[in-house]
Length: 378
Ligand code: NAD
Ligand code: TYD
Image (cartoon, rainbow, N blue to C red; front, side):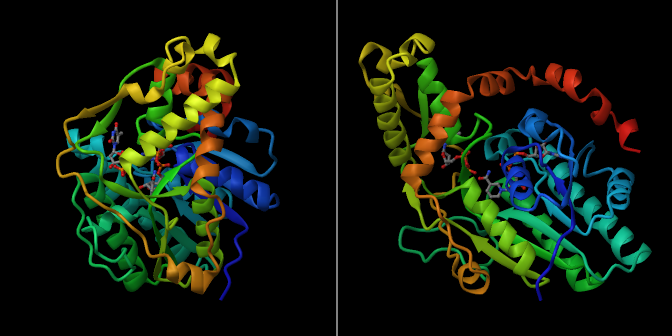
């Protein structure tokens, strides 16, 4: 049966994928109400949603998914029928150095969100029409050997990093709330995303900003680890399909059928950057430290560094279920997507400089004082 959302609560909507999803959704379904709930951690940036401030059906709530009352209030205020849950700590390297934050946000946070959804939708309102969509990762399945078939929805969970383990735990909680309480849930497990608003601690945006600054491009170990890369807009398309057409209690894998070793990504991006500088001489004035400014290649910045502990060797997704059952199809080729992404970072230098400096909080105070204070949301 098709689910027809009218009012969404998007957790983590100020982060990379969440912000792309909110833009995607409002563009396609302008009549729907969209409430973003986000704690604005280092990775959350309300500037990503700036262009939506005047949208009549858009609202921002500065809140934490571990705060039951704030969530319940947001669900009631907007008569929310659909939760799309992105909020999480998301960086594997950070989870290795400080796992506690991942357990707090990803496990306790998801559980609090589930409890609030159950309390408002099932216990209070007996609302038959609702959907809790949980956004997860392929990393819960662990690592693959070179000849192994890609992950399927039935692949046993074998998370290797604290990040992956915390996401696996949250997936299990979502499953349990469906099985035990009858909450109408769906889960999608997606491969590595790239695109606009990607925080420059993740591989692709990190490479771009380091090339522009003439800084080393750190390649962990031999750089032969394989990831299945998907443009964030294709991920949003997949989530859209799951929310509207997915069956309650089901999980769906979303991927790009686009496996690449890290070294290939680095080499490809270096070539693209060299080309852009060749065709746009003005970039040399903006980025004097970038090697192409002096006629050299960005490839000279490639630096092999110590490998990540427990580094998963290969991820690959089999997305046949979503393709056959939901009509999901990725539409953006990797070459086009990378080119667009590089162009976005060149056009949005102020954005990445500001998020890297953390100073966007001044901007938040200036523009969102009225909406971000917790009092204003009550
Ligand atoms: P991100 O780190 O860019 O954004 C996370 C957002 O969640 C931020 O806006 C942050 O402020 C918010 N947040 C964190 N803790 C919170 C809390 N306790 N309460 C409220 N908000 C909180 O992450 P992303 O890359 O956009 O990933 C979004 C989701 O997609 C995550 O659940 C992640 O596991 C999943 N995912 C990511 C990828 C990827 O390649 N980035 C791939 C598959 C799945
Ligand atoms: P990342 O973007 O952190 O995503 P994930 O760990 O969730 O897959 O990393 C993608 C791949 O790039 C992963 O194999 C680790 C590698 N990597 C580097 O080689 N150097 C870097 O500086 C970073 C951030 C990642």
